[in-house]
Length: 550
Ligand code: ADP
Image (cartoon, rainbow, N blue to C red):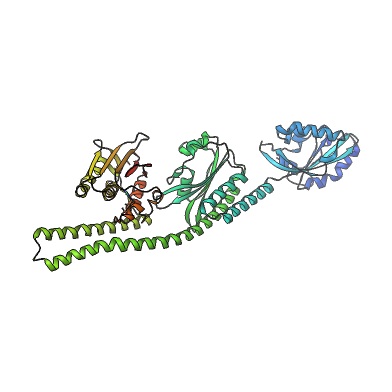
């Protein structure tokens, strides 16, 4: 049991004091040193411990009886500094330059339990009959250093948030500030994408030279990896040993590149989770609670910042959406309504003079335009469901080829009207665990676009096969139509967005189909992309995984 600070505690190693005068001196100061909050250690000219007060017992973990007479270097100096320490002491003992005396020195020390920590030491020397005696006053400055480090980090985070003019640069600045000042090799900020039900990496800071390999993913699902777990649990998550967290592919990948521990905290405002702030390191020395508090504080700042930016961006987006929505409704609603009204007028006024074939033509016009309105209404409803997170997917055993063949049959008449050829290259069947109605919606959207945006006489090719790049399937819809200019491509999956090639040719459309299509594909954990560098026409490429059944 170590001594608590107690005035009657023994401090000096009296057995080692050979002269009465020394004993007297030590005796007088004994009572003061026994209650001093600073660790007091005396060493003789050989570097052996001559006094060791209760605060020293507390700081270094050795009781006075364990410390007395032992070489101080062996007790508390980290092995890599021992020779340096001995050489300095020998110079001082020989009366060398006293530059080490009386100054506050920042050093590293080792506790009896083996952990290393920073100390501040002030050294004094007295001339005794037995030679020089050195008096060291030492203090564990772990907490003080941590406080100053944390304050530096917080200041750097605040500076990044204030100085950045975009959310992207703010996110990059925050992860860099935290990683650089806390010495973590990897820090990441992840943001929840509510519409797509995934969490995506907004910024990652990596120590130069560290190659992350498969650890560096950009998107995760709820519960997957540290960011996914923080999102799902809405509370801080610690992974003390990444190598032991074998259930997570990301932890395994992190362990492979030499990372050992990880901690993540939620980024939230008003109870709503916006993302996760995660750091990965070789070891984390700060106590769990203190570090969680620091990270939670930083995450809260980031949360407030993001919320403010989101509100600003939302206001701009809302104004834009309102204009686009009005423009869309004006065109897309009014045109079919005008056609329907005109056709009913014709029927009303000329019913008797029209042949029955002409009457049927007018009815067909009405039906086609009413269908266009119905599709638009359904798309708008789907968009609303998508934005409120209620676009439901009901997966079951599904043959994708059957879905595609049905959709091709449904579009055949429209393609025939434009003298287009629709070709399919499909295997007998492709079994998926998916929602067939939603996949049909995807097929309908892509096929009707291909027909709509391909001039008469063009060709449309639909293929589906097992994905040679992975375990899933790859499904393509290609046409020889008007194509999509490079400048429009990045915006294509934005609601109401229409490419200039379509607008210039006044081809009707709402800019809703692809937004919904992508949402459906992503809810099936797949991706939809545009094939790059098409010399002619457009090719959409869908990749869907083939998960096991329930
Ligand atoms: P809509 O076709 O109703 O406008 P979509 O969301 O389905 O809405 O498509 C968005 C835009 O993408 C279209 O307006 C068009 O500019 C472009 N687009 C989609 N498919 C094709 C295609 N096959 N060929 C050329 N452009 C296309």
